[in-house]
Length: 490
Ligand SMILES: Cc1cc2nc3c(=O)[nH]c(=O)nc-3n(C[C@H](O)[C@H](O)[C@H](O)COP(=O)(O)OP(=O)(O)OC[C@H]3O[C@@H](n4cnc5c(N)ncnc54)[C@H](O)[C@@H]3O)c2cc1C
Image (cartoon, rainbow, N blue to C red; front, top):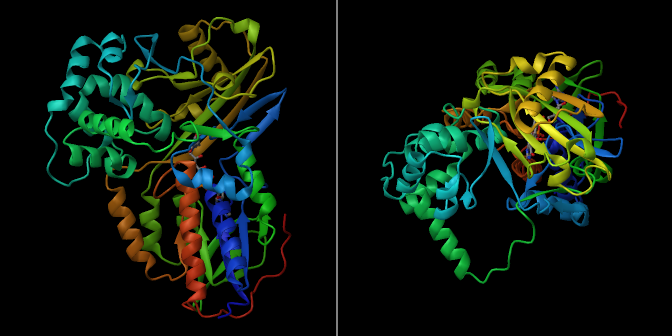
């Protein structure tokens, strides 16, 4: 069967859109059918939140600095792209993550896995929690599982199982590092379904974790080939660069935003800002849900309204490069997180040059600090000077750093973190039932089934497979010749 002349358009060139383009290119070439694949990206560069800057010998991540290796899609993609040898794991600094408690940094007790204690002695020795909270955590073993199937917030779940103090002073800041959200609003089913599964299956989290540890000890499966968090030798931007280089069979149009999408017979018509309209047989929307909503507004107001109900949070990363001698003795493992109850704007600090090899040249150290979270987003709008002052004040109070950084970079991320709030799964089901009306229209990326890089890659991969299959099955009748005039490819 030939699908010659047909056209699949991807909107958005973040990791989800790029992964979809990569998968489509491969599927098309392997299947021997020929169809056109185009990608439109509003920014001048593809990569979306994957952005690495190299300056003064420093490797500065504007957005993500690593990804989880045990979710297979990230490593798989790196292997397919031939950049597996560029993967680097976190350095073994001996001391890991710290948490601020009453103004002091306390190490996260050894044996805490997915916020659950699996080793009693380090927990009992820790000064992170009161004796009462530790006993409450240990008593999790005896807390009965919830029987009903209703969704619950991750905050309520952790408090119910491990106690509120363990939530406020340990789980909440760890969670905030991932979602920058309000854990009392985030849906357990959408953020950590595995925790609920463990509760259901084993009756409790400690029971479940101990079971897993015993099973791992008895298993003769080889040790995991990578540490849990990995990146690339030159930073996460390498992944976007490798994808862009290898998308030789895709028309990549950077700097061209899609304004709106409408039906065009059995296919779609995309209006490009300052450009000619483009016809497509299938459209893969790899843009944030609110951006997608804006583009499909005229086509389906109901679907657009559902997308707009997915909230987003703004945050900023502030990278600071210091002379190593200026901060000698003040370092603390890979970094620390700050619970909301500590009432600071700073939410987390990563010692980037401790976390990964090669992030700072000899004699320099690189920190990355985070501000902005649900309910405290105004800080992102502060002028550069005020933001730097605020961060440096917190670093002085917490770590005793009085030196001025020799390099600083501020990256503001407006409406960057989708919030999977209670009801997210219902909303996804409603979106899916609306999408039935639009064959060949796919939604992918961080807004739906996972915010992590591997989740976004997987969503791109799956959407590409569905679109390709649809073309092969001939479910999308061929649309008349594209209405587009040639647009400049990058
Ligand atoms: C500060 C920060 C740190 C993070 N750290 C990590 C981490 O360490 N590990 C991890 O796994 N995840 C991390 N994440 C999450 C992860 O980076 C994102 O969830 C992921 O990169 C999102 O990818 P995406 O392709 O879905 O969306 P995006 O990267 O947002 O891409 C969407 C693209 O669509 C484009 N676009 C929008 N509107 C239009 C339009 N009208 N026409 C054409 N194009 C358009 C945008 O310009 C953008 O390039 C972090 C996120 C942030 C903000």
